[in-house]
Image (cartoon, rainbow, N blue to C red; front, side, top):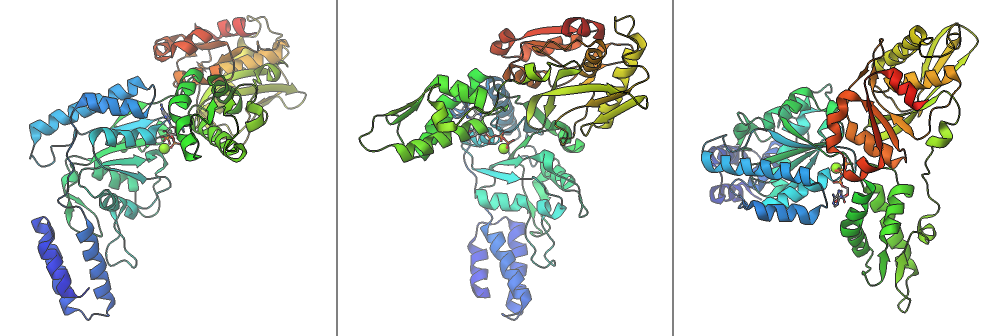
Length: 531
Ligand code: ATP
Ligand code: MG
């Protein structure tokens, strides 16, 4: 394009006045610059970017909440609490939009809705669904691994190879000024040598500032107040504090086996079948097989591996199915033909067969999980060896557990010599995964007491709770995720701190009925039950 073309394009484009002025200034510079100069190149690229922005394009919102609910329901099975929260959020936003119409910076409802939970529970796809429900365009901005502020806010134009930041690119991609922008994985942002991307993001999300957001590359004000920002995260604790402050958290903890079967039947199976070019007449997967995949072939809080397993079955069927073959029906019996032998069998019984091993419940980035705490003792330097990449808080729990037993062993009926004058070793597999937090306290006491008494821990028990030096059991977080994991692992008895009892209200009935939950306040009662 020659500079005359740019002048015409800027003049006819539907640009905000300030942007047009800035663009015309640049066109003037372009007209004065020699065509082949690097400067002319930069200016043209900048003008292209400005002209590609959807300055005056807005999509019409669907404000009908019943219709929005119908879209959310059609896209995702279950999750009714989460959908309620989303609808409340949209309702408040709608009302504020009506009231504040035209007031600069007043249209957003302030807090950003953040969906937090383990992998594969539907956080990203719910974000997409919210856009559909509202009738807005959708863009995902993946923040995983971003360390440079310029990724968010753009590079200055003087920088070689300068680019606008992710927010500008997201709007360009959306083609409207009011899309749903999903800030995916805000917990994976990290502050690096080149500024703090979280600080830039804070400005993006702040309703007091975001109607005049400045990208370093674009250098003109961008009004972000009509953008609906959503965020997702696996680990809430890893979200930078100031960002978390701006967020309204909605947690997704994972699914029970029954919920997974329903999701697979209504969503994953039809989708994978279609991807493989198959029809429901040609292949069906029985609910009994779906349950078996969820229980024995995958062990996850979400449904991603389950979906992969279905994809694998569909590929195999696609290969095997000939035109005149009978329809394929995959059931619990013939499943092995498609997926091989089950990968997960309950291991608690086997692991806890020897004294000194107790089953704990933990929350990791992948959701709830069971972990086995092993204790052993030997001749040698008296003291405590800890392995398994334990964090400081977890190490302290181990010392507390040992001190508690040394001080109270006799009262608890343990051999006082079993733990005295010997080297104690406590290990938390898997050794390579870093772990921290106080919630393994009672499990450590139980493993050590089992070692001291020579009595194995009852294999059907899993437990979680912080312990104090005086043997009190203190409340911990993540109860729902942990109990879902206990259920997945085939445990039937679970010990949690007495003060966590209210958390049981969140538990799906299926899990509530399958587990006997003991709520205890004294670790002596834990030992009495589990040993
Ligand atoms: P990650 O933290 O790993 O990014 P995520 O929570 O964003 O995980 P998604 O990618 O949204 O997970 O979900 C994985 C898949 O499972 C998607 O195909 C999604 O549609 C499907 N899925 C998850 N939950 C449901 C549900 N309740 N109903 C229907 N489909 C679901
Ligand atoms: Mg995701």
